[in-house]
Length: 195
Image (cartoon, rainbow, N blue to C red; front, side):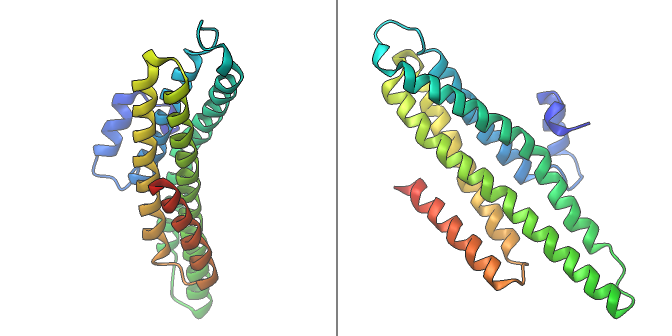
């Protein structure tokens, strides 16, 4: 069963268990998805409300985009587990011959790169959600402003946590060009979060 299909209680129990997965990456994706959900709800509760006619198009667009982010992030709950599983499987490969050692090394590297890509995407989505939620809080239904603000805070936290995972995964990658590119992208996202 996919993690995203579990009840909240079952998901939390899986995270709390003594198995290595799911872990921080899946939790971060879920956290960002919650930020998107709050943003979407606040935008939807603005649509069609009197006094907010001037922002209807903007709120419809925001609700649609938040729903798209939510769906992508739900997929990343499981994508993160898949990526990290590939890394763990690669570490279990035989290392008897030189060919085995080289294949294992390449498999580990490929897995680590994938394990860095997913949280970088989560961070990017979370940054976009944070920015969108701030606009919704400012221009949307004032009764939902606190929900949009919480969505922004949650998304910011998810983005920072995802960037932490990117850095952790990059520490073991040996492809310097890849590390440089992803480190630069992560730093751009961090600067945008802090601005």
